[in-house]
Image (cartoon, rainbow over all chains, first blue to last red; front, side, top):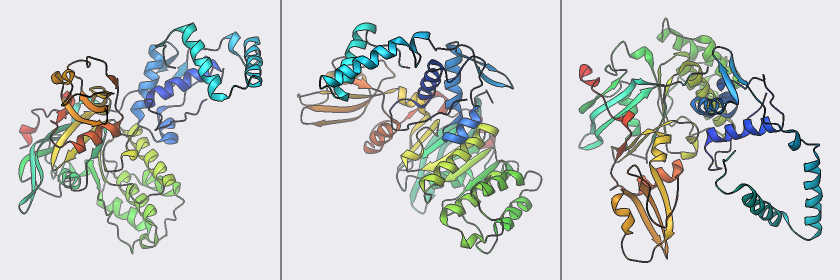
Length: 132
Length: 313
């Protein structure tokens, strides 16, 4: 089960925040195929947002084939976004941690690193990437 | 639930040419709009815009002086409609000598056959309120909870709330909003929530009715209203509005030094030229309309009144 955190001042549409948080949970393995998402009523009771917003997010995830609604039962995860290379114990992560240590040793602060990473991401994946 | 709460074809509220007059002043003038059933509708506007007047007409407590307002395609004061509508006035009138239990009993006696004691008590218990406490001894927030419990216990199809959250602390406000949204999720209740606290509404309401000066300025799905406007920022040094704006309805346009900031309607297509555009927030949209009384009104298709009203009039 996941718990959603809604930031009303982020400027990101509420339904998109739910979509992004489900995808993040799928990437990190917090949600796996067969898991049930919280019902709209449960989300609403915890976050005080409009129930239709939750349903809109679930429909978007359904459309992308990540979850499926089973009438009368709830919404269930269909597939995972976790990749072997992106896990917490993967070699890629260890390399990145090593790189960050070198960047700090060279005197870069958090914002310098963020800007550098953003520009390399831009180069590697191109702009206008899908948010989420 | 896996189905959306609203039913686009069913109408909860519909006004055609609605006018209400206090002596010589019109509190509402020539208002036409529609709110589909199952929506959570924000009723927004400055003080004196006519929000409370509109709610009291919908609750059947005031008559229209011109035009008409219908509730579920009937007259607001129709005996068939009374049980379907709950109205919580701004001053939340309750009997101070009554205990909480007495108050709920009053709700049960006044609503024979459709009172849900369990639902009313649940809300009371969530606030750790004693059923034996006297209403007069409760804080403002606790009284709001009792008043909302009374409204929920009636199991209304339409819930009219006039500034319900005004005197609540942030935690209780969150709890009450969550209770309202749960009510909407469970029962597809249509909720009309009058407020001038914009932060209360973002993420909560999916429908909007903006009043100012007794007239309807905006009505429709929040999402669609936001999507048909663009917030425009750019450099502008000539006199007058930029040429590219000519084909668009400009709601508001301000120039500070070389920087131009504008809110423009884009239902005719995107804005040409070197302008940086983004979708406005609900607050951007409301403030721009309130600052620009001359900007023309906008109703999305679902907010246009239909002909159902003729039967009722």
